[in-house]
Image (cartoon, rainbow, N blue to C red; front, side, top):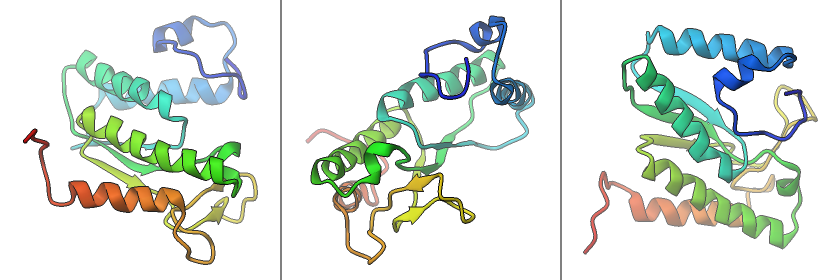
Length: 169
């Protein structure tokens, strides 16, 4: 597995069996092992800026790693949003897909028992710390106009605001 390759559904054990790993992947596995073996935290937080279809896999992985080590901690997504070439355009179709993906991400997280999902950024931003390489699409444009994803976020929050459970009426 090397940087830039397509993400594959591999377990940590399968990754460790590969002969050549990107050094960043090796460090991530070592860090992950240490964190999950010594749960010195009250809740587990992670960032998610990947395509929607990977979120269930990430949540399952986190829950399985905790269970394997004999504990179950609450999970939050402390940062989440879009970071991909498709979202870097003001094309109406891409913006509509972003609006749909925002709702899918939140619904997947809620259905998996995730306590919180903090969406970033509020306003369109190019990179961070002055970097031009990472592009993060906001819920608002640079001029402050609400984007379709911002409208989805507002609608979704109006439905769940103040509720702790979902009941069929």
